[in-house]
Image (cartoon, rainbow, N blue to C red; front, side, top):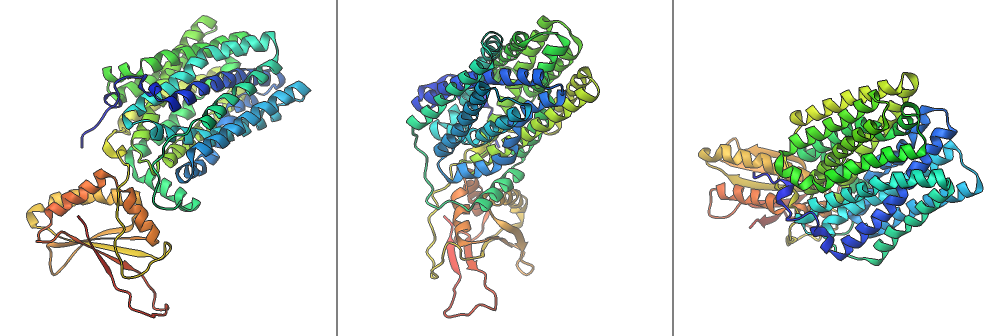
Length: 547
């Protein structure tokens, strides 16, 4: 199977901005990002001044990432079954409401550590709804070849604001106070909400009704578990997030304790991180051309480790800012790589769920990491926490060679135009279970090739929803091989066939080419019945000839 690198899929990093809907939402999102970063600086520094607990400071990051771990999988199932645009509007409304409540609370003088964490959790719930739907919508708004550039632009845009947002936040906090910082964030969060409300985009509609939520979640989890590339990306992203979050979670303590600085120093350090991330994001396409993807990811994770070690050892603000620029570059290259892998390895029918599972695990890793490193810093020392995280990042960098991700053609899955077979029985959508059997006649000389294609087909069918898949060989006619599987209902059978990609269908064509006989392989469909059911008329088996 030919492997495709992201750099081969798009002619230019700026190509997605030619699309009006993407451009409008992307630009307004940067305005909201700027406000969010100003707010993050304000609440992180406020927590560091009103709470003596290092753990509470670290939990500021955890409060916004934990909801993604809890809610993202459900949000992904909603995004795949309903309007992704509506899900984005709901999430953005929740984020704007949390920022507004924080500004009002600051104005009334009612600010406490637990209120900060609670409203951070509320905003995190909004991000858990919006982020999977927005990232999944990129594939609806743009051509597939522009997806890597779009992901890079989204990361670059955030890190462009990160290069100025923290410094702006520190200045506003020092000169004008937290109320102005929170009010600025509240107003900025209205921008993406308005952009999504104004713009609409075409989404390929499914001829089938939405799935039930539990079924949709189960199908998304099954597809992710059976997709080796997505599974590897999720594992590595979770471990990277667990280790690398120490940079952002403990940065207020680095500014306060190691550098003896105030909010402006904290903002400058944060800006150094964002500047490095912005430069790396703009250079990302060229870096992918220069280096193999796995080497690039390993170097990026190592850069984050070097950043942690430098912060642990230096007492110079200049050295710390340079180290954070290196860490920011590694941060954006790594996250962009993981995001592109998951996007391109996922078919459209499940992309919201695979992205949400990816976000759930990496957010869970980041939330857990914030708690772990905050606990280590509180019980031992800030230096110990940063040094241990640096060692963990080196291990994560090496893990890529033991658990590689190969970006192949699996992501080219727009689904098939499957035609419902004609049946004698009048089946209802929930009729079932449905048993499917296809018989192949294979010569001995073709057995190895046949079994190789069947291994590929097994995973493709299982990802699409086939249950109890088996391959049987006739004991009396060894040349006859029977593929069997089940689906819980007739509707599940229809969904399975609509989900099969052109690549999956090509595998069946290869199997059919090995079939000996004048007619193509025959597929029999049957509905399972117990002996307790009352028979009022005959229930024949449907036979389908696959083209």
